[in-house]
Each structure stands twice: as C-alpha cells, then as structure tokens.
Image (tube, rainbow, N blue to C red; front, side):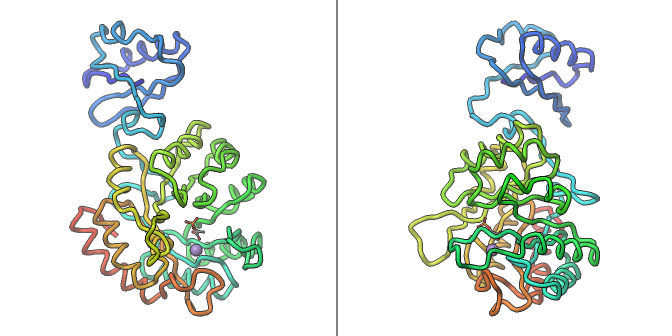
Length: 337
Ligand code: PEP
Ligand code: MN
C-alpha cells in the first residue's frame, strides 16, 4: 500500500501519518520526492482502513499496490534511484560504461585492458574471477587471484570494479574486494544468495535470468531490497527464445518496461545478449536510445585467444569507437557519456 501526501504536507503531518501506520504494526518507507512525499507501507495492510487515512487533510490518496514487488516498485518510490558507488554513480544523466574481459586471465591482460578502456571513457572495470561455466572442464576463472589482479588494475586506473559472486560463502570477501557485486543470470533466483546480499550494503548488479520474466527479475531485486540493501542495479543480458542465430535475444522492450514498473537503474549487456562482437555496437546504441542507464561490454585485447567469450568480445580500439558513436546517441536522448 502507498500513501501519497499532499505537496503542501508539513514534516509534522508526515510524521503523524507514519506513526499512525506504525501503530497498526506496519512498516513504513518514507520517500521525499520532488513533488510530494510517498509513504511505502509494508506488512499486513489488508485490515488497514484506507478511507480513515484519506480523511487526514494532509493525505492526498491511498493506493493498494497490486504487484508482488513493493520496494522495487516505482509506485513506492516515484523518482529514479541513483546508486552511488564511491565518487561515481549508476542512474542519472551520465551513462555508466562497464567494460572489461569476460574473465581475468593474467596481470598483463587485465592491466592493459583496464588502461585502454579507461582512456576511452569507461567508468567501471568488469572482469570475472569466479566463472559460472556450463562445462565443469572449462576454465573456471582465476578466483581469488583474479580479484587481486582486479584490485591491482583499480589501483593503476582508478576504475571501480564489478565482478561476479557465485557463492554465499564469498560475500564477505567480495564486500571487501569489489565495488559492485554482480549476480549472474544463472544465479538470479539463488534465493539464499540474494538474502545474504540483502544484508550487505554493497551495490548489487542483478542480471536477468536466462528465461526469467520481468516480474520474476523484479522479485529477485525485491529479495535483496527486503533484506535492507536498496542499492540494486538491473542488467538486461538477453533471454532464451526460439531464435538460434544470436546467443540470446536482447529484450530491448525490458528497458521501458522496467522504467515504468521500477525506479531502479537498468544497464544492458549487448555482449552476452548477442554472442557476436559485430552486433555489440548497434545493440549498445539501441539500448541507450531505449533509455538504458548504461552498458556492460566485454572487451578483450586478444579476443581470438580469450579463455572465455572471445567471439562476443570487442577490442579496446572497437570500444573506443563505440564510446565515440554513443556520444551522439546519448545526446539525442538527453544523456551524456
Ligand atoms: C558474465 O557477465 O560474464 C556472465 C557470465 O554473464 P551472464 O550471467 O549474463 O551469463
Ligand atoms: Mn562472459
């Protein structure tokens, strides 16, 4: 349930309504928006007398929220959320460009890529250290050593790090080692992991599951937020469809859908969505044109010999070209690179 206060409601009047709701055993999230204050009410609201609440002169209206996601719902929080990460942020006018290899492979590789993507305008460095591979015989990532190399790259370039966490056992280490914890598509519904991350304060980049609906995806965000961590960034990375030409099908329509349903920022990963390096640029431009808050792009300095996802990785030079082309697209939709 949400209670929308009148624009002229005073702080005392807001407090009075909050106290009344708490007196009914409900919990309240206060969102002071640009136009008015919206109170998001959680708990058993079935017995709440909405008409009595509406009699308060400071209350504009009371609405039931029919969707199962509450904290992730735009009705609860009408303004866009901007997730702060150190002295940068995801959401807002400036686009976030998360670039780097699928996997960290060596010190030379990650430092070279980090320096080159930074020079082109990347705002975050990505790199997998713990890799979710379909085959148990495939390269599983450099694991803890990979995280150390990412930190080294951060020291050299200043780029904050995004890396994927697979096990609830590693939460504490990731909290210390990275700036944004990535939850991969395969773990989107690993509820124990999501609950653990709800207890953290670290920003979480939550990828959409391989075959998940938008509502299921938002319910996974809700798990993290329900635990108290509201720093969630959504990442559309393509979904399974009958089409075999591309690795996945990039659901561009998820961008405006998320913007309507939720206040959380959304970035798009055209690399995993298409599986082909030459499709990354057009899909990146399309994602920004459709309203995405940023991109996650796989960049490798030697794609042919990459240990993982070489065919979808672009070179640092191609990334530089992409950023330059993106400037024009961004400007058209009132954003900046
Ligand atoms: C990745 O980002 O390298 C990755 C494994 O992505 P996804 O979970 O989207 O497949
Ligand atoms: Mn990958």
